[in-house]
Length: 567
Image (cartoon, rainbow, N blue to C red; front, side, top):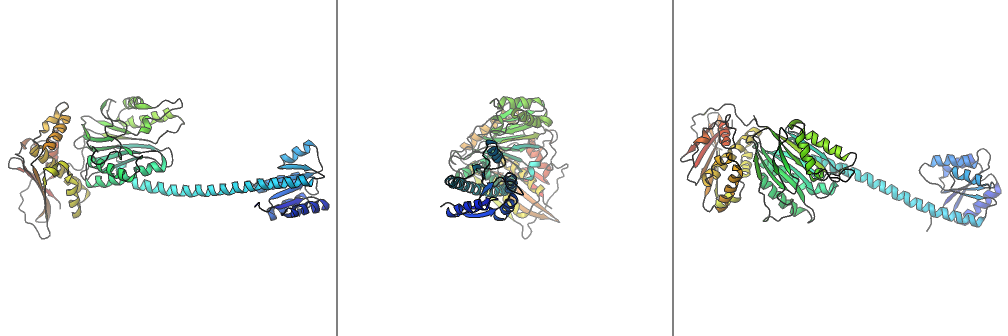
């Protein structure tokens, strides 16, 4: 049912006021009267009418002036005004419409026509009311949505942020197409000080894409903190994303592990653009193309967490990008593409390269936004690294131990099946985490356990020779041979023993690793000069020796004991 109108009738003639007011009342509406323009303005403020019937020629203030003032007072609210005047010239009607009138009837007024005009204005007023209500509702929805987006953005930023992203070696750039980015960049360090980086790109744009990538963060930070490899992290990410997200949703990602002490980069690339390692003079020394599907597509048994490794032998920089970079289009519809990426990388040295790539992309786009979220990461990889984990001096001591009350011993024996599949290092570090080690101790012990365990497996069990890594394509051959021998392994075991001991006022952690292999020539590893050795093999044990109070290989090399000072 149409809404009843409040109609303001403005006329300086009483008869006209009476006649028109009765007509309005007979139509079921409410009439209020004003006898000049000033009264009309005052009544408008007091009564807030829905429709105004305005005479033109009146004392005090004419209808044109009154209408102009009413329009200013009404602001954005539309109040229909119909002029009723004896002035019948075209120019009079034009003046009335320009003053703010919506229609113009000449006197004597045709009452039938006036009723029709009122009904038409009633319909228009009803539509205006609905439009206004809808607009107000949309405004409320928008404001509520903006508040929710701000909260969501704040929470996402807090969840994603980690102090390691501010590592001076890392540069990063993120430009979303909306308030939320489907691209995620994160960095964290393992207990052993190995730098992990992930650049993930969720399907789509905006909040939904950001939510797609959220499972990445929890798994990445949690598993990195426990010391898992990026291969294990990729495996778990794939499982969780496939479990949580709809079938059509997946996450392209590149996972990176950088060991600065060994000058080694491991990368798992699933559906992300090619990653590059670039020398100081702009030469691309290595590239990692996508050789895996994005996360969340394959089931657990089909997933391949194999990584590709590269050892750098000169200062360089690792560059990662999302597909928003290579697929960015300029005003002519041209894509930025891989060639422009490579040209930009070749144009500057390590210090300016990242900024130059960023500027090149921005200049290419001009004022156009990207079609997709844009993200990129640059990581400097220096040849010389003097981290806290490298002790400046090494002095061996003689030890006579006794196990004090409350001390403990942990033994883990791994058979061939576990050696093939189990990531034992996070398990051991999780145990050590219960004895409240500080960050430096965690980092150093992680490195010690990693090196001794890997040497037992690689040299003691699998019979691999690290010198193979120094040959051309040697590391690929080393990894291939390792994978082949590990797959064929039937009977073998590695025993890892951790023991906390006490001597005088000091506490020590004793690590013993024993393998079932025939042993190997460990003399070169133990006697290696860490400062002089810049090759790809032998640095690990030399570094372990520098961190320990004592390091000793026993028997034929299939048992090693490391003593680490806790207090």
